[in-house]
Image (cartoon, rainbow, N blue to C red; front, side):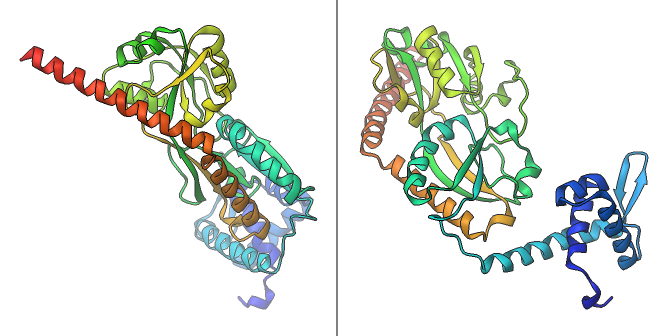
Length: 347
């Protein structure tokens, strides 16, 4: 096979066909007609002297040769994409590009407003399309249809690039006159009624099962390790709903400290360190290998990192964090003293 006889578009066709395993879907993904894609498949079969895709009772399936070709073709196309992007420049002042960002409610509420302020002056015509985790799936990100996903993740696909945005501590929001606010110990925490608020990763979610503790996240997994369980009255993926439930229903909400800043001016609500150790939450952004060298994408990633640094270096937040750490240290000392006293009584 001679290189000068290979049409580069055929490799794009092959990649789409093997990814979608459907002539119709592959044509749709590339924005061409189905007859054009069928003709492309015929030319590919002639080129490789192999059927590549065969029809079975389970639909179209790749041949052994096609399976070997797929990863290699993807690498070739990625390399070509990188070469082409090297010659492109991005001017934020004149760009009208649409950036699609999947963000959790936590990330959107805290990060997007200052990002919009930056865009107003640095890229006045750039458009943001902010989506929910349930709006996309793995393939959307992998294929570069979504520029960034910003969330906290239990597991991370190895094929994605990633960057840490910030690490945040957990806090408990409680009514100031609640039993837990008056006596913020583990016993009072467990006896209280709670809001569960969480959404890691991405993709369409399903309803939670309260008894499947290990699937409920860090807070409940940590409690489970101590043979404890909290009484959850409300399950939500929305932090503003969770905070409202604390305000109106008197429920305890355990959430990242940065999210509590929305209640700083409400004297009826207080933020308290959890009466047990919970692993810190790390917010990350992930993106496809296809976008790694895109100049506009590099600009956006750096701008988000700058906004994140401003948020976490804000004097008001740092002051709150210092007060929070002191309270947590004092609370840990009390817990240790109680444990020591209990040991003496047992002896």
